Amino acid sequence: MSAGAANGNDRDAQNKIAIYRTKLSDYRQARQPYEKRAAAYWNLVKEKRSKRIKKLLRGTPTSLADYVLKQPPIYTGPPEPENPNISSPRIKPVPVVADFLKNAKEQFGFVPERPATEADYQRAYIEAALAVGLTREQCVHVYAFESGGNGTYDVQAGLEYNTPGARAITTALGYNQLLGTNSVELLAEAGGEFLAALNRKVAAAHGIRKLTLLHKISALKKMIAFSRSVPDRWNLHARLADTPKGLGIHALNLDIDIGPLLQVRKLLTSIKFAKAHGYASPLSAAELEMMNLTGDGNGFDMVLMPKDMRAQVPTSNFFQRGGYERNPVAGMNNTVSKLLAATNAKMQSEAELQGAENMASLFETLR
Image (cartoon, rainbow, N blue to C red; front, side, top):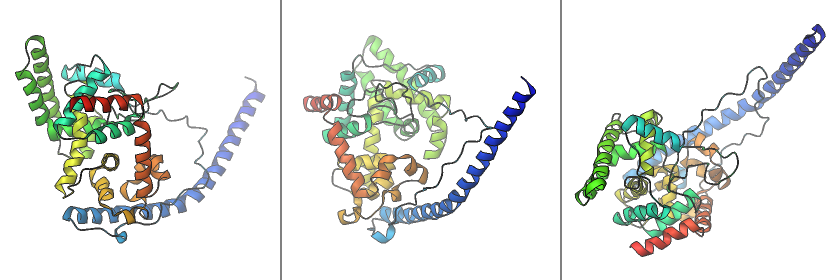
């Protein structure tokens, strides 16, 4: 390279840095006052939510005064510029089904028994749902909302549609889109129920089928022990879920004997939460989805809210800041009434697709 070319490259680099610094200054000047407003807003949301949940658990009705009634501040300034001297950070890929299978085999010697057809898994799922009293409307509509109305038992978030360049965006998997953390937590909390279900099948099985079930039970016991190696808290289960053993546990959703139990138990947990806190009426699919989407406590808060309040209370009251800002559905439908209406509309629309219709038909056949 000639000296002239080298000098030219240096000048280009210096110009880029100068432009970057100017843009960075503009960005910080706009961002700092916004961050101050946003921090105050979300701190107030957190404070009111903490007090409100205590009231709800005591059975004390809430009023509008228990909620932040303003919408969160929106940043409208320039975007953060990219530093020309720093290459784009490498984004950690989200684990996919192949990773779950690999770790299940390596960590626990477990290979899920996958269904021969989608109908086989749907049948096992519906039998599990009927056994615990879930309704067709709850299961079909939550499935339609979570899995796009035509999702398979192994569909993962971000890969619902066969589009070029599609990639997994979370570990959410299956009909009810369980996260890896859900799988670990459900084993910790209800592993004994899953073992009992498998033992009942063992009692009626013979030959190879019996040996297969016994091997599943052995692997499941190891997985349950691992999931219970920390206190029963979401953040601790999330750490376990991100380990090789945790990824292996998530593969249970693909097994025709255990997967439907996990998927159904996720919905049943929310229903039991509502009943335990005095809600006798059956949860609609949209109400159940609110508990699935925002967590049982926050979702139940929305379920209990009088209809005349729902149009006035922003959805930001039920989310952490990061979750809200990543969730376009909550931001676009920014009151409880709008979010419930949008959820219902999507459920109704997606329930007309083939996967949801197949599930609905099987419900009628099996019940």
